[in-house]
Image (spheres, one colour):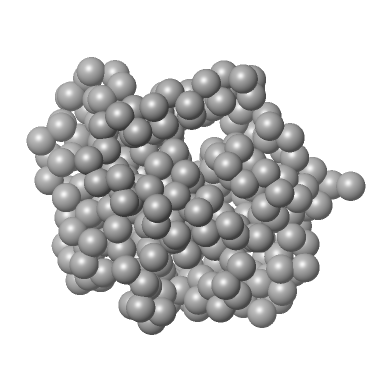
Length: 265
């Protein structure tokens, strides 16, 4: 049995499941105590957009999205993220049998992986899957939806319209859900980061592609645009869940990275 082994465990997230669980429980305590609109916690998304930085910076923001995604009780979740280290023409589908996480392995849906790969002329480029943008999402899935099957897609040079067709195909099955991975602006001072990230947030909230291309500097902008196209096609409603920057964890406002999470319901 082939396993998609951890590539960034111990760097982007802890290797100890107990440590991760304590962090998630802490985040949920904060949400339960401070979230004004508790109805948000009852939504049932078809897809979520989440960040992919080190947990100390972005896991609080991602956690809210996975917590509400659990409400949808998906049987399969397709995680889609940009390639940061390896050039990929198009997109690569992970053709393994299972996916390692500190909470135990997730089963990969090999049939759906193969179907997506063949139907949309994708590839399996093994070294592209040593990728943090998708890997950091898997402990959340195992923690919140322990029996869910997963598919991992890492994209590079890919048209958003093509990705949208893939997402729409996945969501044709009501038992499927999609996770889109993206951080926002990188290494601007807090004022400029807030301004640029605000463009991204407005674009998602209004499903506005023109707005998205008026200054949003999300590293996963292809995934976000693909999600917006799909949301409009399937009449999904966007709900913004959380926004913050690395300054919330580090205190350094001189060069921050932006993080957001959203749901498509």
